[in-house]
Amino acid sequence: QVQLVQSGAEVKKPGASVKVSCKASGYIFTSYGFTWVRQAPGQGLEWMGYISTENGRTSYADRFQGRVTMTADTSTTTGNMELRSLRSDDTAVYYCARARYSGSYLDFWGQGTLVTVSS
Amino acid sequence: DIQMTQSPSTLSASVGDRVTITCRASESINAWLAWYQQKPGKAPKLLIYKASTLENEVPSRFSGSGSGTEFTLTISSLQPDDFATYFCQQYFSYVTFGQGTKVESK
Image (tube, rainbow over all chains, first blue to last red; front, side, top):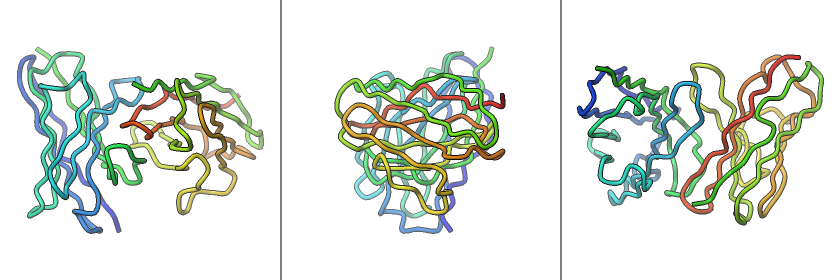
């Protein structure tokens, strides 16, 4: 069965970086990319970007451009999302989700990773 | 960017009620719309894609309709397990989510 298992919760200081991983199993890894979505406490869902696992091409939301890097490792069937220069308003649950394309519905999701940014 | 607006933000209903949630796009997205259900502390779950196609194993009391800029999610007879927050998502151009509709017990 399809599973996306994310890394554990993180606590970071302002200005630091965080890397969240997403281990995929149960399907052909390169047939689907990863979309990353975040959700601040009590708020809605925000699209951060997409990475193709077939060719590594990325599409990032404008507001994260220059601060986020998404990668995918076919040898370990893992996707990664690194966010730099963290601010307190980056405190959120970060989700990976399976997606065919940068514009696609999201049929399987990871369990979420809480990132807390606090001094 | 395409903006998605859901209404209402909160909906109070009872078990057995017919429930309708609306999602409007700021420009035409054809039928490139999905609906998700999210419960507290959990990841969203895909219910419907391409505006009206029910995802596998989703109960048939859920249905979706619409095209262009106006879409609806209907729950024909609300069940106890359906109290949750629902989000729409366009995928015509990248991805944008609506702000969510919380369905709560009346």
